[in-house]
Amino acid sequence: MEKFDLGNIFQGISTLLQSGPVIMYTRIGLMLLGILLVYLGRKEILEPLVMIPMGLGMAAVNAGVLILPGNVTGNLFLDPMVTETDPLMNILQIDFLQPIYTFTFSNGLIACFIFMGIGTMLDISFLLAKPLQSMFLALCAELGTFAVVPIAYMMGLSPNDSASIAMVGGADGPMVLFTSLNLSKNLFVPITVVAYLYLGLTYGGYPYLVRAMVPKRLRAIKMKPEKKAMKQYSPATKISFAVVMCVILCLLFPVAAPLFFSLFIGIVIKESGLKHVSDFISGPLLYGSTFFLGILLGVLCDANTLLNPTVLKLLVLGILALLISGIGGILGGYMMYFFKRGNFNPVIGIAAVSCVPTTAKVAQKIVYKDNPSSLILPDALGANITGVITSAIIAGIYVTVMPLL
Image (cartoon, rainbow, N blue to C red; front, side, top):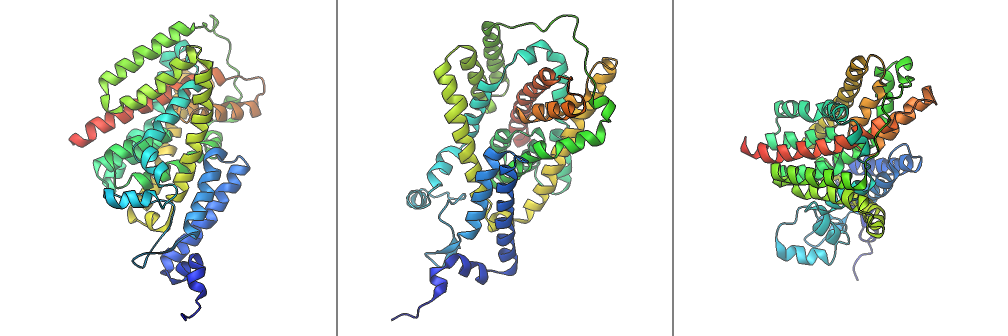
């Protein structure tokens, strides 16, 4: 009879104790970080829909490491690096999240579903009302997306990898996933994980940046009404705009056509009055996709993946991209403030960082605390929506141009 060994029964503990100090402490750290993300999500300090499943997945995947056939350690969640079809067919039957990962995440489908859902939530009236203002702020708020590319290249990353991590500055998770899938297949897992870890900073961190850069008297500005009331655009006008923009952008950047189509089909369905379809896309499809995205991101945070030396660079560059974009958006707000001779609240600039609708809500919340009678949400949403389209265009440019360098 074989010797009774508790290590064979409690393999999670056994593999933890038998691994090297770096792996062991990293696994413990990631378990604690996962628990912290669940707490922060529950308190709504970070986005709960992503952070709660992501945090628990991160904790579970680092706890549930076992000894697999061949005496190698691993988990039964998923294998992100399967390339051979024969092993894949076997893994699809064993690793319980592998089908969702393989058929929705690793091909960008989940990003398109989320973008479609975002489209049904957008009211492009705000964009149509002040297109030049919104486009200017959106370009300013992409500063990190542009500035981090040369910085990353100087830190030793390839042009493709530099563009992929720089897209974190757009604060648009599906866009980062799409770009890294096309340009950085070997790094798209850590880049996407880094992106979504940091997207919570737009909710919890940007208010501190705004307060540091914008004094209270400017945050409290109540903008005077425009001479002309905001024009009400008919559904036909919005549909025409969406269709024309979709065709033009697909013609210019065919490589990003799935994302453009997904965003604009959501807008068209909403404005067409197809309520049941719109409710499905904005409800079960969007929230289900976001929920599973959170779980997948969590279980991709195993210690071995994140101990890649390049990940430390990605962590630094990702937060730098978001910081520079936030600064760029606020500077754009200041420029509009001077251009409009004081009849503009500079806080609106932070909303142009395209985390829809988080940054727009953050901007309004900050302003409300200093002046409850100040309403900036319409202008903030215009910049916010334009930021989404701008980040998609930049993704299309990077995916088209970077492979040629």
